[in-house]
Image: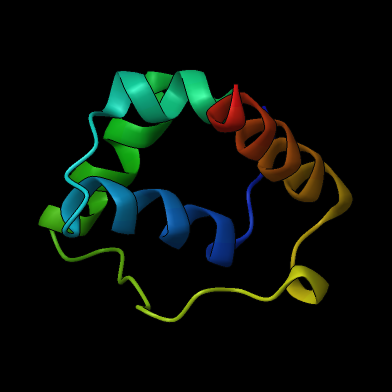
Length: 79
């Protein structure tokens, strides 16, 4: 099971609960991660075992796989 950084997880959660109000299935497809993973993060957020930072991560703080996923999602949005 892949381990995602806090910054990557927070980015996904912010897109879901923030002003964008994106759905978990939509975000899972865009970022190539499991819907269950996203719902797990949301559940932990609700029960208080997870906190979300509002600041965006810089590209230097992301792992190479997160950078690749982000690049692919940006390319798919341009099409």
